[in-house]
Length: 356
Image 1 (cartoon, rainbow, N blue to C red):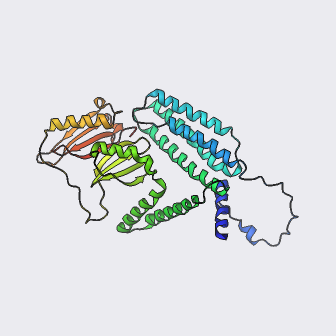
Image 2: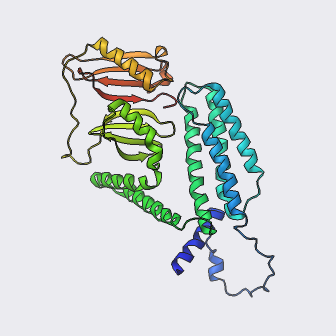
Image 3: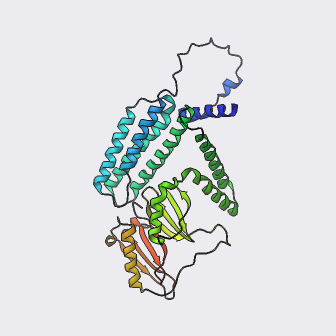
């Protein structure tokens, strides 16, 4: 009980001011100066006064922006304008709110998330074909997610939230500890082991609930087959990884869109390799048409006619490669790419264009 009380007090200090303040050296060592008279303090305001109402109101603005700003690929300009206006209105409302002192840091974080969403929209208006706007969008998503974590901690500290929230604090500490150990090691094998442990542990905080992953699973099944057994693997930043056998599917979780198909990484050399059908069934031209159809279905916001096709198949090679590049040297590395086996099985798919 005493340990929990100390931990709660420490957390409340961090949430309120963002850091712990150490006493100065003079405070620790000076004994010559006479102690001043005991000052008279005004009554300390209740740090938690109105916290439940604040959490409810702030969360409603967080949700409204999340609903208005999906930023799906190929989003019409009018939807982006509506997203911007929603973020501006939310920022104005949040700025005018009265809030309990303990919520100051979390509240400012949410306001900053609204600013990033506005910046994302403005960047999209300027250069929609470049993914610069996506950087602001991801920052906003991350800040809004962090706001939810801080909000739940505040509610717990103030007695209006479940005590289980404190378990997340322990998990986040474990994640940070693993990450630091990985960064300090010079052993490549140890680095990989720590990386795998960090990925698995951090997933406990980053993963969406299973119910929220159903659209992503349906997307994978639309490619692998409705009877496919889809296994959730992990979440990295905003990308979720799923496996069907040894085939990896990567999904952008903020939009439930496909970003990659490849082989499931092997954690050990003895892990089985992915086996693909290499039976010759299609010509290169037929596979190109299949590639075009696949991109039109799973990357509908891409105008493939505005891209430059790069096609490759070495004599005796296993795969037929089709890569559509965004023209211009400044856009190097911006493409959508798909590789088929001669049997028409997808070996690799990747997209690095804006919005994906």
